[in-house]
Image 1 (spheres, rainbow over the protein chains, first blue to last red):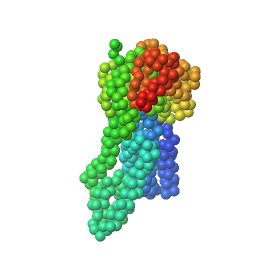
Image 2: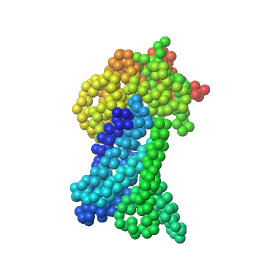
Image 3: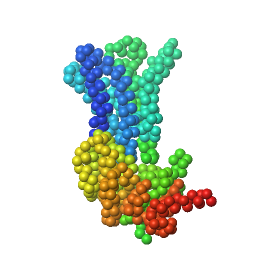
Image 4: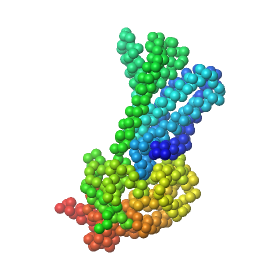
Length: 262
Length: 244
């Protein structure tokens, strides 16, 4: 077992016992169960959950991650005084954060569906919802780890974390709408597609919404999206874009961690 | 002349324009207790952290038993570190923490659990670390430093937050480890405590180590009978030199 696995093992054990993480799982359980009971329809519940997942998963991942790592600062120092390699330490810290978050999410959202029973088509959508949530967890905990390593001051770090989330959730969509409004007399399907690819939350949103009938109402843009996400090329580009959103923060973070003074 | 366990040469480090270490030379002799003393901001912690590889120096070199430590991780298996602040993951137990470090270090080291018994820590080790008092956490901290029977112990303010009984038990342990030929680097603000422990003294001031030598030598050159007064004399002299 190498250092990554060892750090991961104990850090994950600590994180899964965290009250905040348990609350996070319970929240998803309550809201999913509630929606299933009130609507009585798995598809409708999943459509409502899309917004909740896209809003909450990035926020919790980036904020919980940053706060958790700032609290662990002295402990990380003690671990680095052991005969361990910093690159592997970073991997352990990142995964030890990501896995509990992803686990809490999968459990919180998945358990009520399993309890209420699912059929084939809503099962596939559930899987898509879970995969999107887990990928967003990976992206935003990578950003959280990077922030906690790069930013010495915890208040500024937390501010940056919330800032990144605001930027990708609210500000970016405002910017996209602005572009669409200004150039409304031109064909913008491909520009929109490009803009979507640059934001992990938008990738997840489009990929998820296309699974629902509502996609038909998006007109020509919806048709372009459907064709893009339906084809092998589209899937490859989407996967690559999301992989970059994980790999870039992790790579920058590892470099910063290796140079960092504790 | 015996080969020093740690040899530090011309070590420099600055943080954002502030020169914290300015060409520090220091040799840590094996089988002895070295006390690093000096006012706040003199660079004691920076020096210790450089030895542990936690801080990357700007210049100069550090070698352990003749081998440069730069770019190496393995040498830290020979060091036990007790940091000033003990903060651990809240939801782990002391026993899990010990198991984690054992895992990270890998097999090979002889485990020294004497301090667990000396501090009567066994019942506390089953509890989550968050419920332990500051003093108890500091004891866990000490246990971790001694656990792997390291050749070199680096203790940063080890008795801060300990009650008098625990503090003297820890000091007994430090002396007994020294008796077995192992080496200790210790910092403290309590001069009387260092007087009890130290064989050698490194006096640090403004990022330099103007005196490194035995405790007796320090007392002789300052014509003082206690460490506290000797250090006070050193500080006074340096102030006069500065003024001149």
